[in-house]
Length: 147
Ligand code: DQA
Image (cartoon, rainbow, N blue to C red; front, side, top):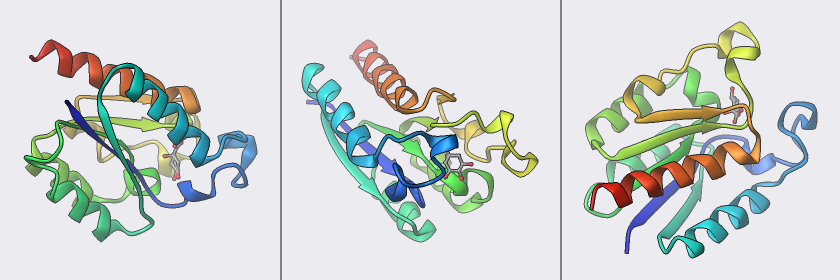
């Protein structure tokens, strides 16, 4: 069975209460249950992690090889700042899709750059919860094409 890792970056544990005008009312738990439903339906196994710490995320990515076939990641604020997460992804060589709830290009200037996008397969943003679901479906499709 194909194994996919999901990483939620900093402050995504606060979803539901955090800036609902931007991120909506959906909670992280609701996102995770929706992802698990898709995983069950499409017969892949999912491991889900959330961390507020850059180094922890770097470690998770570093340990991915030979353990997971693909990664779905919302690097949250680290999207715009973390050379370390970008380098970890580039080094891992693991098939990765980046997702964001909001459209980062429609927001403040400091968010209008992703250090992560150049080293991932693709990026889906702006669709709220649906960004995650589309991202997971894309990964599963890509994995099933590669068998
Ligand atoms: C985010 C966008 C980031 O700019 C922000 O720091 C987040 C969430 C999103 O999902 O829209 O924490 O990654």
